[in-house]
Length: 304
Image 1 (cartoon, rainbow, N blue to C red):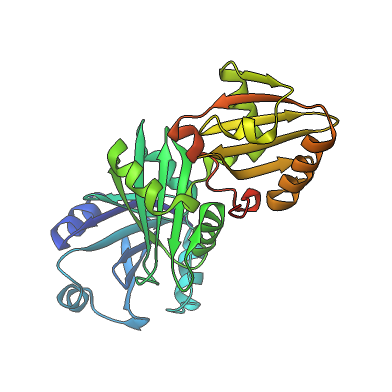
Image 2: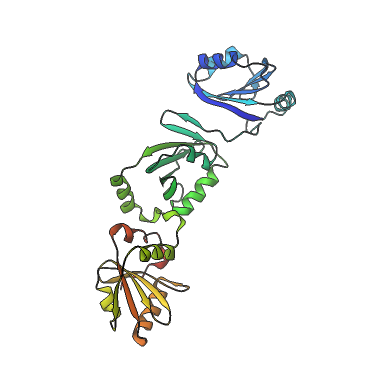
């Protein structure tokens, strides 16, 4: 079967929808009740798996409820009727999302891309089965740049996205979409810097992008201490190997050398600077550029 319609409505809406169906064979779901039709004739109506009269169902369900229409063959309807189990899905549904007020009901993670606008969107995902959990994802021009999942354990970045996608397998999810201002984006940056994803870019991807966008200050016959004195900077150290340091306030904050990260790479860079004639390329960093490195904890250098 395929879901062909989905909307929040009331009994009046439902009756109008039913009256407009011609030669309909399939199932209509209203809240936790199911109406089974063959050639537009109601052959059964069930509430919580028990046979109920339609008027009785109307008296029990909420004033506003979810209306879903699944179209199929006579054989599929009869099979669903024989094998109905309230705790299991009885139909295969298409991935159709539903807008209700400011919220969207999603069947899969990728459905959210239908509703994003240009600029920054903040989306709060709330699983219907786990209402004490939620995820917040920020998209910039439809690209994930931040994610955090609040559950039994708080997850950040790509791990949060992975957890959210897994949750779709066991629960419908309500998504609230908001336009995010630069001010609010900066607040999140400061509060949860580890949540930023940077579009999947690696540490070296960001380095290359920064170096290609500006001219460096070049130091020869200088020490590492001299290079670190240029404020918030990306420092490329060129010797027998190439190493990189992100510095702030005269201190190394992040480091990378070939296959080494963090403290190990910084110690190797220091040794190279002491025994070789190296050249330093210094790229001054804005606050926004410096913040791009905050998600790379493995590159963090312990306080010197």
